[in-house]
Amino acid sequence: QVQLVESGGGLVKPGGSLRLSCAASGFTFSDYYMSWIRQAPGKGLEWVSYISSGYTIYYADSVRGRITISRDNANNSLFLQMNSLRAEDTAIYYCARGGNLWYFDLWGRGTLVTVSS
Amino acid sequence: EIVMTQSPATLSVSPGERATLSCRASQSVSSNLAWYQQKPGQAPRLLIYGASTRATGIPARFSGSGSGTEFTLTISSLQSEDFAIYYCQQYNNWPPLTFGGGTKVEIK
Image (cartoon, rainbow over all chains, first blue to last red; front, side, top):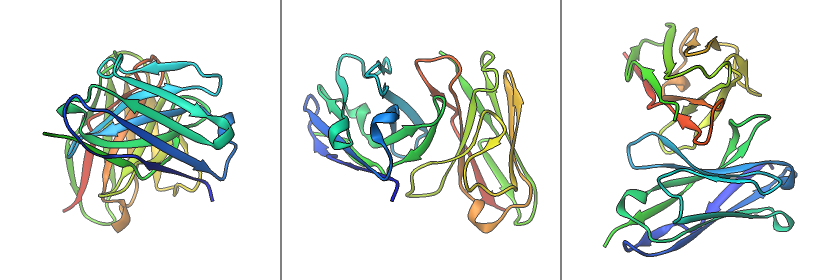
């Protein structure tokens, strides 16, 4: 079954860290670029980060310097290391697969990150 | 950064009626535009890419049009399962990839 399953979300204090994971199955993970996209409660979608199959990486300005995206093609996994977390990072974080260009044709169900003291 | 603006914010439509959603880009994105549908508690689902190409499994009642800075998503005859929030996304000039603020299609 073609799917993405995120994990690793939870409650963390401001300034804390969290590592999100995304397990891919049902397709050749190494062939695809991947992204993390987030959605604050009751808000719209915000692109966070991108990693290509060749490990080219981009970040949104709002997270650059605090977040690191990585992938493990051998284990069909995508990661997001989040440091120095702020209240405004509170959101559902979705893992998404890239289509032929830079739109997203497969999304996971998301994992909720809550940053609060 | 390209800013995507969707209108209206909320669209009230009766089942069986036509819905027309708009998306405007702050500068040309050519045809590099996608539309997504999101239902409560669910992840977004790709509907349209390349401004007008339906994604796999998307019913023909969904159609996209436009290029440059003005785009439209049309749902020809709304079904009960179509009441949701719709987002547009440009992928012509990035980073960053940017989304519109969404249009909520609700039952009239």
